[in-house]
Amino acid sequence: MLNNSEFKLLFIGDIIGRAGRWCVKKYLSEQNSKQNYDLVIANVENASHGFGLTKKNHDELVLYGIDAMTSGNHIWDKPAFFSVLDSETRVFRPANYPASCPGTGYGIIERKGKKLGILNLQGQVFMPPIDSPFECADRCIDEMKLKAGDDLPIIVDFHAEATSEKQAMAYYLDGKVSAVIGTHTHVQTADARIFHHGTAYISDAGMTGAHEGILGVEYNSVMPRFLTGLPCKFEPSEDGTAFNGVIVEIDEITGLALNITAIQIPIITGT
Image (cartoon, rainbow, N blue to C red; front, side, top):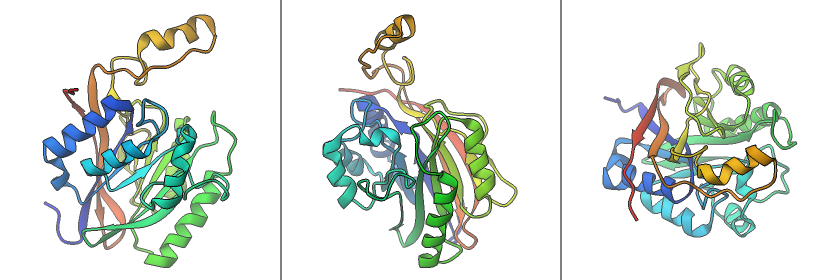
């Protein structure tokens, strides 16, 4: 049981399309699991038909109980959502995109009287060209702690391809943030742990959506690209749904992690 100086955070791995949104609804709403967490964060960059996010689906996920949303390179797939990025303080895009891009990449949110810093970063290895996530992390963390104190709990969603880059970020930020949670690859890794100076880590939180397919996409819509090398249209899968994520328990006095647990829960979806 958590005492008054601790709180429990749920981070939901990349939500993919309608199947992923259904998983969130089933887990948070119908199973009343929302009450088990002080705060719920989700990566939503693929929540609308597998690419980007719409205002309608954003509102849907808020209704289900998500308190804050992070993203990655696919958050730019639906330009109509740019205005939401500019107006909605609970939705984050990677902070190391140029400042002229819509939205913000970091901020402090409060729920149940508890404050949490959120920082969204994108990697450079095997990813589109972008500013250094390491230098950006230093700037954003310093600014948040200047506002809320050195003990502010901070969660980092590091949206990156290379496991080596994700581990490097965890070592770099060990003791400075509560957790570095990897996203983007859609496959949950078996390396959840707490680093020496108190930062929780996992290389990838996994994918919330249909797991019968290829990274949330229908098998038949992906194979032509591998077989021919030609462009093809990807369609989100609807089968074999599961809820993926991590639970992080944080000491509010130190702002450091006490525990991290990866979860994979099969979910039966509906229409």
